[in-house]
Structure formats: structure tokens, C-alpha cells
Length: 249
Image (cartoon, rainbow, N blue to C red; front, side, top):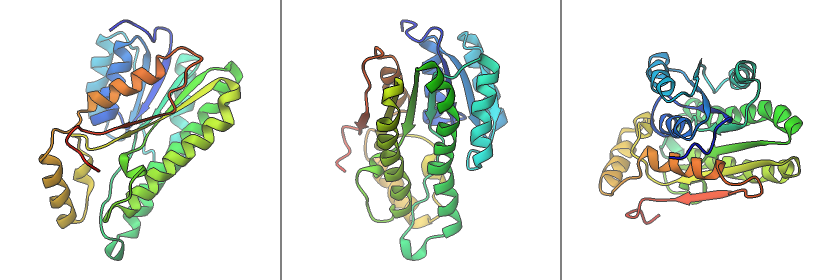
């Protein structure tokens, strides 16, 4: 891959596995310096070693991004380390699926705090520097669940519809500062995400459904992120909706 992102600084949240890990590596391969944030230090340390080998000068940030202050801190530490933040990839999230009537509201509260409020807090923290430089790109990872709401996904869809709506409103607020906003909406991806589901019957059903198709791989989503952030400055890819070929809904 050509080093289209030489000189750029990126921060990827939820980088200890799956889409976040793949995105951090893809950005590094494209030439960016990369900060990575997640809760699991051991996973981040292993990723940082791979990023170092790619010349990405990685910054490892252990943080619980359901906390507003932690979501803000990782941006401040990235800017302190590199002197700027050009690309923020808000990927951290969980997926709790269960019927509304049986929902554990504590789980759902955590999901909304991480999937929506944490994303907003990191974005808000990144905007002053981007506005001052008149340059920056926010990439938010949503889901097809932010486009189509299905039974047992009410809380998760509420969070991802929120991400999609937030992204479009943000774009319209910041485009005049030369800040770009992209939202990526993947369908079924082969990651650890389904392991978070606390409702055994729903988890078994969605695993069986997913295993019946050729699932997207984390690298497929990472490729979409790199495509968005490597366009010329006058091009903003607002939205990428992507599904496995075998996925109908």
C-alpha cells in the first residue's frame, strides 16, 4: 500500500481486537502515526509491537471509554504526544441484544454510555484542535443496526441510530471548518462483539445466523476507513453502508 497518510496522526478506540485492531494496522500501513485506546493492556501491548514494526510510533492508552473523562483524556494525551490529532476513529462499542421486556437496563445504560456518549465526548475533545488547524477527520463506526431495527436489538439499534444521526448533524456543523465526518455501517463482521450478548437464547440465534454466511472480516471495514480518510481534502465520504454478500437485512 502506498503511504497515503504520511505525516498524519490517528487515534483508534476499541483497538484491542476486531475492527479497531485491523483499522490501527491499516492506518499504520498507510503511513500514519497511530494511538490506540482500549481497556485491555495486554492486547494493546501486543498491537503496539506490531505498529512499532510498521513505523507508526504507537501510543498505548488504557482507558474505559464509557467514562466521559477517559474519552476526553485519550484525545488530550494523543495531542500531547504528537502535537496534533488528524484522524479520530470512534470504534469502541458493545452489542447487548435481548427483548425489551427482559432487558437489563444496567447493561443498556453501559451500552449507551460507551456506544454514544463516549464517542461524543472524544469527538468534542478533538474538535478544538481540528478547528484551529482547519483540518481533521472524524470516523464513527455504526452498524446496519443503525439503519434497520430488528427484534431483540432495540437498545443496540437505539445506540447506532444515535451514532448515525450524530454523525450527520456533526458534519453539517463542522464542514465549514474543513473537518470531514464519515460514518461506517457494517453488517455482520466476524469479531468478538457477539460474545457480549448476555441473553443466551438470542446469542445462540444470532450466532447461528452469522455462521450461515460469509461474514465480513475486520480488515474489510478497516479498508473502508482508510479509503475515507485518504481521499483528497475536497472529498468527504459521508457514509459507507456495507454488508456481507450473503446478508439480506
